[in-house]
Length: 287
Ligand SMILES: Nc1nc2c(ncn2[C@@H]2O[C@H](COP(=O)(O)OP(=O)(O)OP(=O)(O)O)[C@@H](O)[C@H]2O)c(=O)[nH]1
Ligand SMILES: [Mg+2]
Image 1 (tube, protein in one colour):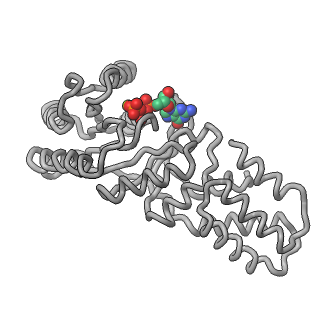
Image 2 (cartoon, rainbow, N blue to C red):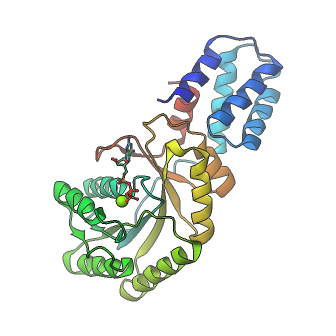
Image 3 (cartoon, protein in one colour):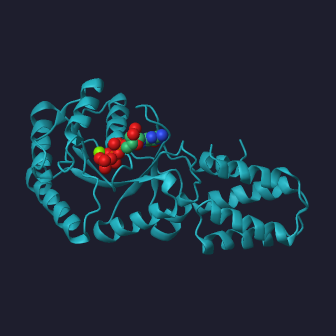
């Protein structure tokens, strides 16, 4: 785990007296850990009033963990419908969309789904090859066109492939460029129209991929995408690379967006459903 967790651990570890300053220091530390300032002070103020008569820093830490856990929704286990599901992975450049699409395809296949990868990133030159390599390694079908094609047309073909070949899950890897709001909306509207006309009963999910190492910037990205197209949830990547983690609380508190999966490496297995209890206890350093 990253250095932030280590600092939080040592913050409680050096057995300082439980004093008013402790809570101010804690608020500062939470801000460093990517909490928004208002949320950090709210947590530390609530903690201060709950721990008025407390003299054991371990107990304060425990109460902090409880408070943080209560502030998150229950584990948002993603149960897919039994019919055709279409997951659109969105996000800016380099956050891990392509890797995550392969991880999700592999994960859902191991749960009995029949996934198809749709190479809807037609923008970047090497993107189609990158996803094809994943498909070959995993033995999962990839539907792709040439670079510069129309993402909606690829989704169309992926639906056709699913309908003729028994696929029941399409995972679409989209282009990693920060669209203008209007272009993004138009592109998704077109995809929505294609889905409505070709697979009316399909369930579409819009998941934003965020790089945990980008800190508060990830929240700004989420805000932009969410304003433009109403997201269903977030996949947080690169949590293995010194993530500070407070972003999860902000996503929920400020945008009401659940974190669905956390990715902790480059291997296909490095993805797990978000578990609020485990997350909070690791964040605070109780393991
Ligand atoms: N450490 C770590 N690296 C990751 C993780 N997820 C993705 N990466 C790496 O991040 C880099 C970018 O991943 P991609 O999947 O290509 O990201 P992308 O969003 O598709 O990028 P573009 O298509 O260029 O926008 C690659 O080197 C991945 O191996 C993760 O959870 N942990
Ligand atoms: Mg990509």
